[in-house]
Amino acid sequence: MSVLQEMVEAKIISIIRGVPSSSIVPAVEALARGGVRFVEVTYRPGDEAACADTLQSIALLKEKFYPSLHIGAGTVLTVKQVEDAAAAGAEFMISPNTNVDVIRRTKELGLLSLPGAYTPTEAELAWESGADIVKIFPASGLGPAYFKAVKSSLSQLRLSAVGGVSEQNIHEFLAAGVDSFGIGNNLVSAERVARGAWQEIEEAAAFYTAAVKG
Image (cartoon, rainbow, N blue to C red; front, side, top):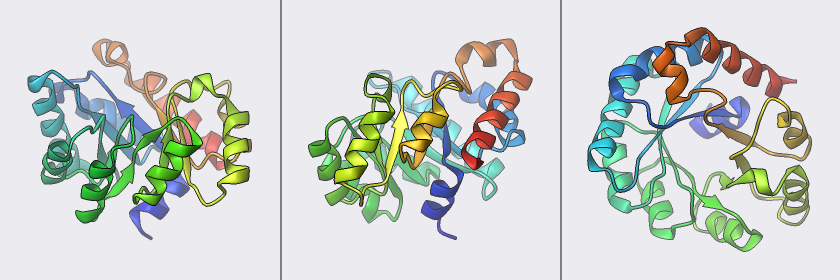
């Protein structure tokens, strides 16, 4: 099974933001116990030290968890960030926007591309540029009905809902035809990590992974 097939089957991608490499392993161990198989570690634009630590986290997690877990980079805005994350071991690149150069370089390196879009025009541009899944972001302001409408006209697209997906609404997004989900603070937050709330992370992971299996 390809990594893309695994991603579409698993559906849940945990977004880890603001967690240092020194604290990330126990958080990902909790995710794994809860059934999560895809983890995105985000860059922090404008903070070079944090971006370097993102690369360190990717390398650390890839070494420790591959192949049972797949590790990717998030908030990827430039071709250099693609190349740096790939060198660290990232298997997929996720962006908040549609940057054709980022998409194409990702695909040249044989990696999965999940660019962000908001409108049908942006989503179609991302898809035609080589995206494997188009991340609709932020999903909270659009709602499940938007995904259903886009899918009805652009049925070839694979869509990911990111931003505002919760335990309360994930089933509605599933019913609308969403192919995958990026879950941030509802799974791993800097606050939970600071408290060492590994059980909370594991339980949240178990909820989301069970929800998409139904």
